[in-house]
Length: 149
Image (cartoon, rainbow, N blue to C red; front, top):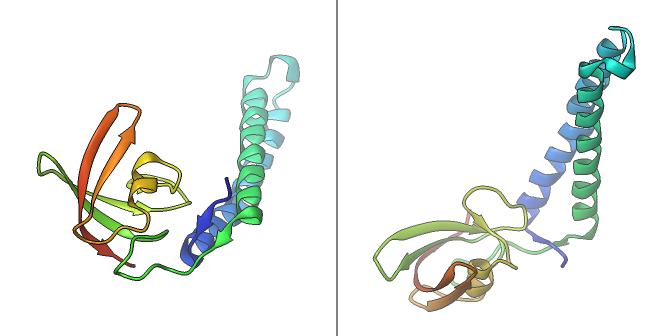
């Protein structure tokens, strides 16, 4: 599925990619160089750890680059309807409130458009009740507030 990103979310991912390709990559190259100076590479734990870290970094760079290349940039939503970039306050049946951002970037406090919560909220308005079909079980929530940032 193609990610939908607001211009701000796209900038956030681009900044993360620049950090990984610049300073982070340079740090790992330096760590490999230092570890090589410690002698026999076949038994050099620091060298193997640095090479593993390099492989993980390069994989993350590849994933981020692909996400940015295939992402569809959407305009920030209005306050009336939930869309990518909306910050939404929902209230469950027990009265507990949850603030979530509809996001293609991911991270703490976010829900992607393909997640059960994110998919249920897209296109809704304040006062709407949604049914969330999550792996842990179904639950209902009412949209209390929509914020745009």
